[in-house]
Amino acid sequence: MPSSLTDKLFYKIGEVAETAEVRTSVLRFWESEFPFLKPQKSNSGQRLYTKHELDLVMQVKHLLYDEKFTIEGVKQRLNTRGKLVDSPEILSNCHADTSAKLLKIVREELKVLRNLL
Image 1 (cartoon, rainbow, N blue to C red):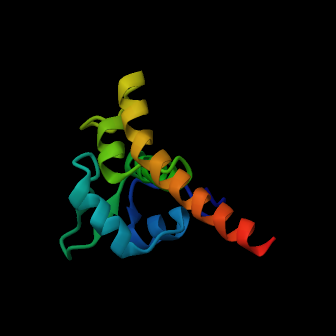
Image 2 (cartoon, rainbow, N blue to C red):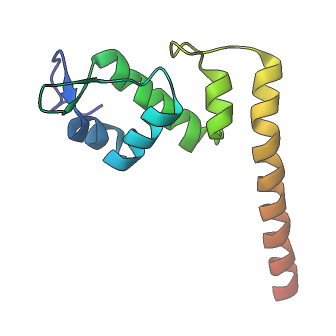
């Protein structure tokens, strides 16, 4: 997290988006998909994220972008309160779909390389 982000009670959606390096539209989509991401709204309708919600956004981003989980996989991996669920069955189910897609891509790339030789 950038050091320019000070410890505050609430962070605006733009600050959270900048910190997580995602667009604000992505954050709004994640709010609709994940029940644990429900920022408060100010009187003017501005979304106000707590430090805990900011941490959850970073966790979701890590699972989606780095660990290659699907939306459904993240829903299974994080419970309704945003706590990690460490079940081997859930982990294997979440990665199975992603692994099959990845293997298909690698296979196609290998075919292209073979044809180049």
